Image (cartoon, rainbow, N blue to C red; front, side, top):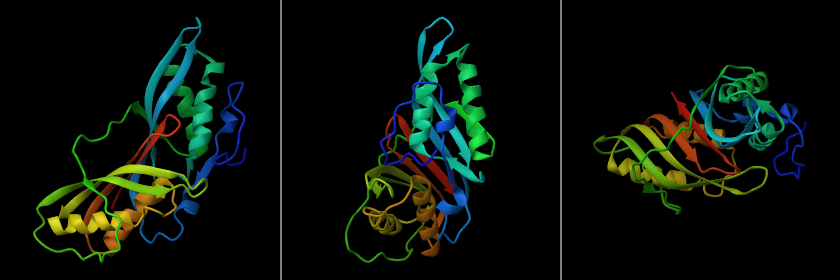
Amino acid sequence: MTNPLGKKISIPNKFSPNILFPISRADQRQGINHEFKGKDIWNLHEVIWINKMGKVFHNELSVVIDTSSPYTVESKSLKLFVNSFIYKRFNSLSEVKKILRKYLEKLTKSKIQIKSIYKTWAEAGKNVVVARKKITPPSGKKSKTVLYFEGFRSLCPITNQPDNAKIKITGAFSNADQNSISLMLGRYHKSEGYHERCAEEILSELLEMNFNAEQVEAFFERRGGIAIIPVRHK
């Protein structure tokens, strides 16, 4: 199976685990100077499956892949795989989770977790600013431990389609820092990068600019029934 992203692919007409496509973490991280820990949360909003009696169920699940995994999964291939569940009959949701875990662990060469759907934070965020202004270094009293931002955008490196996200940054920051970081995030507006790489680049850039950042969480909006939420920390 080749990478299906950006290509016209026939919808599976049978249960199709072989459609899953791996993405190398090492290839994805080329050019990033820091090593981070963390996880990728994949919200699967359209898990449709059928039991032995022919009854159709619709569930939402989160797949959690640790960043130490040698591989992650390509999003379109995961969507097609999940869509192929309708061609298999399951005894229960537990069996659905077991099958999902089996094939994703084989693909990523790591242990994964399957949990209830992961929900975003309720706090309103500061708007990302797209402007050609100088980003000032860290300054002022560090009175904020969490910063929330809305309006982040990057571009898919294959399709050039926009990916939109809310950003949550944990650490110690001042009001001036928050304004500077909103400008920094705005520079990604026309930058290409997979979701996971964007989160790592953001945290790497914050550290290189001497901001006191501990963790970045990027909650990307769902596409094709899947939302990806990379979380990276020092």
